[in-house]
Image (cartoon, rainbow, N blue to C red):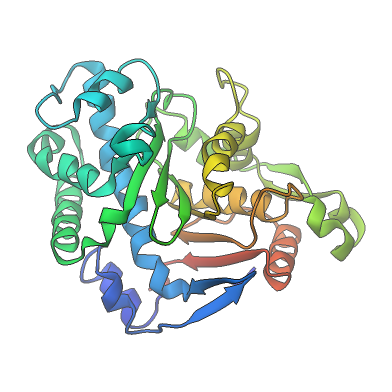
Length: 327
């Protein structure tokens, strides 16, 4: 598995100028495309900025939904009526809004910005979050490309026992993105998941078996906590997250959308595992390559997992960028 770091211009922009910068600034590093199956994919560095926006915004949006459900915030002034009616006792599914497109991403930004004072009351790391909100607002004012982005589903109502994720749709570039939230506080299983560092045998994806040797043909060893959170969560009520995600993205993929996955911290580890599973799947409806851009991911598996992941890259089934602060 290849690991990349922003140790140059883009790295400085993200971690020193602030966590959100314009994609046009990142494009100073490189702007090129590579074709897979007749689809022109941009350079991964060019795509990193929008993925970073999504992986950070998911924290604040989940906080607001949680506070609204608990009754500690009245969100009636900022949340659209359709959202208020949908999120109280079930996961947020807004795919029918805006003529079937979903909740516009710029509306999600407006909701977060409008609730800045509310977030100040419920967010322990307010200084950091406030900086994020300012960057989001500045990016939104300068770049209207998010008019083509829509939130489709957001699964956080069972955050005490299951990982939080959202699904975004990009109508311009025909991409569907799964974004995982990273670790929060001890009211959820996030840190228990992080600390469950024993190894778990994950079945080797079918498309990889012929290219591997020995035990790797059968399984790869990965972090048990991360694996269980998506694929084998004993505390899950109903479907596992993996099955829910497949159901969420399949309708868009059948319309010709490509699959993207992203996340920060714990969310980055989960995104790497999901991308690995999808990219190695022999399900005919899953398009290749799957694109994964992760931020500050802990290590997910052993050298065997790395070998299998690298083979997926060599086969052209996955495009992967792992962003770490090595400074």
